[in-house]
Image (cartoon, rainbow, N blue to C red; front, side, top):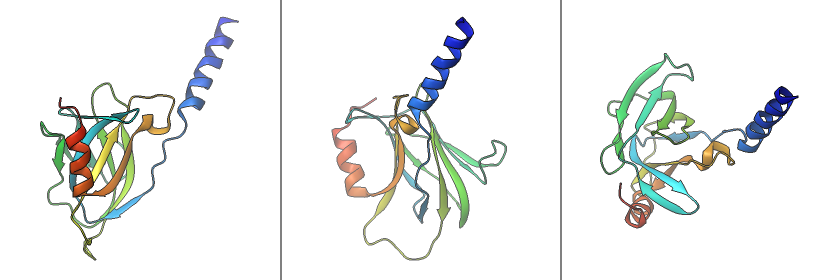
Length: 148
């Protein structure tokens, strides 16, 4: 009986978290910021890493960069192509997205990657996301964020 209750608990936990499927990104942007996001509040993350992979296989790493003390990161020397972009920070739920780098048409305003990591196991991706945002928007979020 205990085993059945335990199995039911884990099934409910998995269903509650939902499936983490982020919209694919096609961009020429290879730098940005990583922040913690929970219930409308932001905090700059000074610990964590952004990983670029050729596929979702763990052994297909192209590069790993640590985030700076202000949550910033830059993927240097990325060639055009299809990748998987993943961000992690201790004690938070990681996020990943299909990421295509294309150095064609330039954006109308400077942009960066905005990576939000969450810790809410009841939301898809823990409440996290990876998007391309204007540098101005990222700056506004960072200005209101708590520092590490």
